[in-house]
Length: 532
Image (cartoon, rainbow, N blue to C red):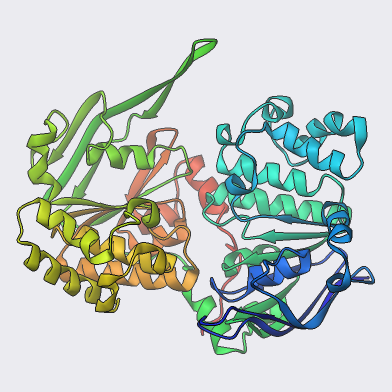
């Protein structure tokens, strides 16, 4: 039975946009018990299509032509009140970022119960909450129900969103990038959960993603979108293994895949030698039990000149904390962090200042690390000016670096909000390189980017590393990315490095059960992309 039909849908963009329509002439359908993956880069119109189906388009994006049919109803002709009744009860949506979709001031259980009461569940709403949380495989549902969203991990918040979406057993579920930036193990759990729910309840699913590895894992059919149009559509096996459109082939080619190549062992002198570093946090107190969390321990490693070492592991494994210990953004209690033989840990902030020129960090979220009120050129030149470089010379260097990261020199006069996510990441790289560092620490620099933009940023980092002779500590939860860029990998679990060695060896013959679990959780691991 066909649940949803979209026919020749066109949604206009405001005047002055990069194109006249957000989506133009698109047609697709979803049957009961089917998963349709809508694939494409940011800006391709995937989310606009989903919001049009849900009746959530803003006023500035009107539907100018086409039809949307759901269970025999003309969605575009329904009144706002009728759409509100339909949403939640018959169709539901899982949003990309649960932290912005959940009310931070309300407990999780109260939010789910509210959704049930709005749609007529009455006095039974609160009783059903633990059942719904248990249905999405959350541990201790009663404790989760009493928690506020910020107390939960990213994967737990995403499961709460799924529980809320499924509360009234809708026949159509729209999942908008529900696994972007999640750990591979959490991502795999969410994908299996959606597949299990879909098969158990016969729910039709529109799954929006930019990752063909995810498509290979769960899709029945695929629709590929580019600049507001569907350029290819068909059964998942056909699109994955015999892509016809050049854009589809380009997206598939951009997905990191395959076993890592063996690389020659790096035997140069050590740049960084980390031994015995421990960092603990104390949580609780007042009215609760005080807990000690060992964020970093047993995490020794050596990084040699010109080498890229990958720190891999799930969120909370201690990767970023260890990196922040190296650059003194976090103060460890014990251990040595030797940079060319000098222990950085006991140095005062003033004594550390000369080392900041040689050790730079690229942060995971460039938008949060860039001052929104400062132009990009000023942001890149700020570090050199602080360290005594003449302003004119620093700004000239900023222009060169923008060219190096393949951005137009006109970007100097623009603000961070005027750039895409991939462009902002390039700006973050340029800012780090402005200090002419020897050691670059990249903290999840591509985790939330489209696969094509991700491929461009990784190629850029590889090119810069080759040209400038950089040494790199590369932090990621995506083992496909680690396989592509790292000479060696160190696997972290609960604050400790449980396995490390040459990338090809660790991937081909993992020794630790946790490493094997991570490798088994790579989306689409059983799919071999065609040569395109």
